[in-house]
Image (cartoon, one colour):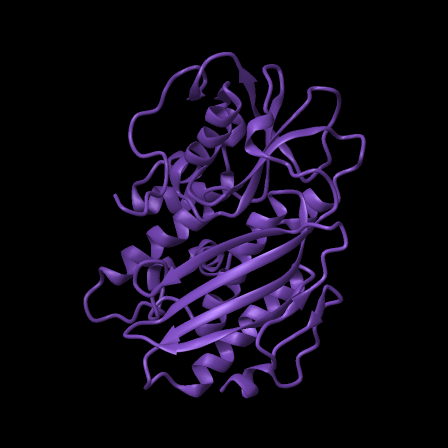
Length: 314
């Protein structure tokens, strides 16, 4: 199986030795590397009746690549551990690997190796390596007076999850059949396969001073809360700047305020950052608020009640 999923693959330049030995060799041209890991567990992070194997593979790589880019690094390599039941179809594993390779290539990297084990459910664990082309962009650098901006879509993954949940609640109908919700296929696709805008970070001009950065994976409020806490500041968001007309119809159909998805939906894998207020930002970025004195995250000066995002053990 390992030979099958590695056949014909071409490694990215950062992988000096790929699969086939006891370990891979990955270049570290700066004398250091960024590393992160993330795990997806069947029926906790994905459902096999909601997503294809290729979708799951792309999602697993995307969420790790986004974390690397959120440090200001260029993804260079991934290693993947896969646990699956013994009766898993060979074609499923092949499609899963194809999805991983597709997203790895989109991020400019490749899969350098990994491991396979038997497990009662499908588990995908990815470790990602990145080449830092600048000083790490940490969560702790935000300063009072900075502007807060985002790159990528917010709330679309949460909306897609809500649509799939509504579809699954229909008796006797396969979840892949969106039926009356077919007009919302775009948000469902975004939930199944997030597409982080890597270049929005990696191609920032040198004269744009970014002070803090995070991948929006748990939810905008939760992830900006990490920046606020780490930096010892507060962040105030503008509700009007967060409005997305693309979510209005699905919100109306499901009886949900789209702002709830935008603020706390999670799994968007957009990027949220703070910048010095010294000029216009590149067009990929939209200003949504400002860093102020204090603590926590507010919207139009008011604290929001309710969940702020994903919590693994809630």
